[in-house]
Length: 318
Image (tube, rainbow, N blue to C red):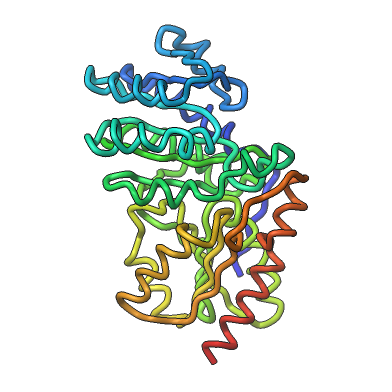
């Protein structure tokens, strides 16, 4: 098992803030809109540098999406910012009709996704957002794993034409990817090559998969771990190449088991190479108020549950 270490923890939303500033420096058409959550979205640095390119919309998320769609007609590249729940479920009609249907170049940037929103509880812990957004034709869906990858993804989507959903979070997590990485939309990242099981993880679950991989190695299980940061377009070639070797799969995500990464991988397998698959995801339920780490454990989204899923799927394979 390849060793990964870290010297610092940081929230992925701060990676978005840093990336937004860099994207703004690179392209004068990058503008930012926010629904009264500047601090939560870490937009302060962009606002200080480019005050004339920032628009505070207030608590009017549907209006923000409509304004963003309109701004693209004049050549602007709008980045909208609010919580993931308000970026998707609350404004789904506006995104579908005004952004996705007409292929508007809007970057929908969503913080506080998943259970790790924590104490705010089920009403704010959206676990369906990846499914909602990946079902929209033409929508790119990205869920990076740490600060550095989120920063790189934010810079990359400014150069990508078309609507994008960028998902990130609130808790501090280890920074373990390269600070100078080139982010390739739709290109999976090989974390560790192995031969016994394919672990496809996204977002906060990538680090948990690494922790699981280290323990599995001690148990004599050689896990291949792949970071699927882009849910759509999915890197089908990387998935099929991996499973051709391992012959079994575990998918890991901070999302509902229905409609997320696991379902996307299952579709690839059933069309090309049907194999045993286990899901590490929230099992079709809402969340609840609590400390992020405790919620991840309760809902089965930690390294120990990944290990159990690996043992189960290898037994099925055998």
